[in-house]
Length: 210
Image 1: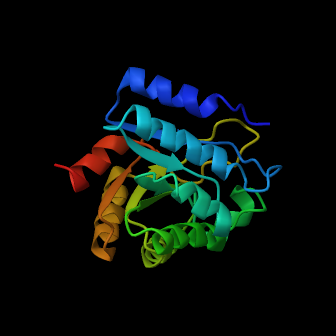
Image 2: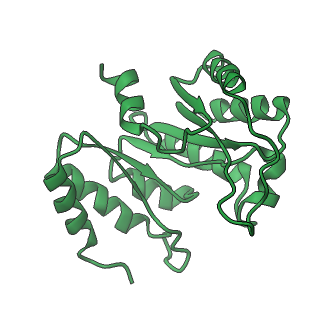
């Protein structure tokens, strides 16, 4: 069972550190009826209560429906969920229970439930995807209401993982960044070393606060 003291302990830790921005994530809890959303939301509430100046980004499982609503009732400022790879590669790279469509449902569902929440996603490149597949993926993300996007180079963590098919050049990343901004994303970070939570606070602050 989830530790009942974890939300309070997370809130206390963030209050002590006093960051301007924090990203919190969770493991999948498919054994729980709500996927752990209520526990997750309580962590967000405790952070807001104890560290009111801290902006909270939640990097979530593919919650939909009631579980998504439960988390959003905790009022995270940013709801992040990563599609990871282009649609064609979903079955090869992600858990077979995941899909590009379900991930889009999470992102669009968040925007439908809350006008206040900012949504974010991420794509890894270098699996052998084509240019048009990247543009299609970004277009579908934007059509789902995704506000912020990161694009980074896939690096093989172990020999048991999928091989790197291509090292995407910085120039190509810049082209994708420009294309994404033309599609209407509010802010885009793209580059070989960019990751899902790369400079997350700065990305948010640059667009919405400064």
